[in-house]
Length: 136
Image 1: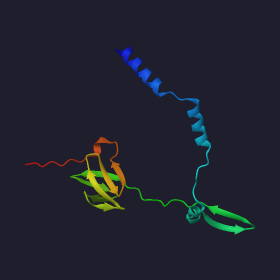
Image 2: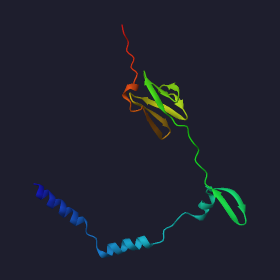
Image 3: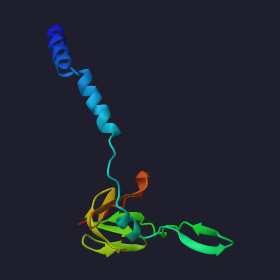
Image 4: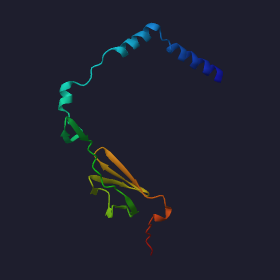
């Protein structure tokens, strides 16, 4: 049974792998054709990513602007459906730093800002879970 399946698959692949020299030459000709790039008007409208620092003796020095540092979100604890994120207790629907808390689980939370989704998890230690039980 395996031999028959192997033979059928080999024949199928060999039938569809038929490339002639004419087809190969057409593909090479398409590669060599000049492609249209970005128009000059579009390039002139784009913002320059560099900042000019100084210009003297026909020498211009440029500095690449650095990205803004963002404050890191860190999850410290989860208790009774609430999460302790960046030293404040948050529940589902609360917002922080542009993110909305969407889900609180046993080991982590899900934050969303438009299409950006962040998942925060507790540390790997097992003894940082707090369970409250009601006693009668």
